[in-house]
Image 1 (cartoon, helix red, strand yellow):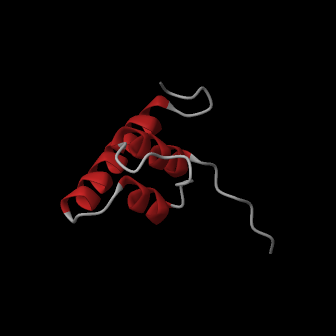
Image 2 (cartoon, rainbow, N blue to C red):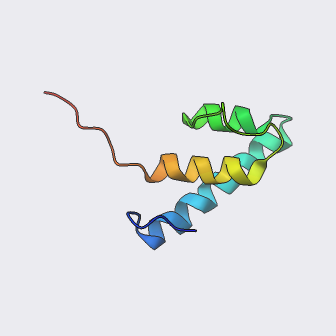
Length: 71
């Protein structure tokens, strides 16, 4: 499910990057929470073995609007 405020192409690319990143964490023996922590996603709510939720959470982080910085 693509959120309404995100461009579908951006979402598709973010999902691909998130899957690739999660695959690397899985290959190296990490957990879904480890992958989410690496991207700054909220790891408290994720199940330790639920990689699909980790992929979606990472994609949300990648599609987030950048925070404004003060000069």
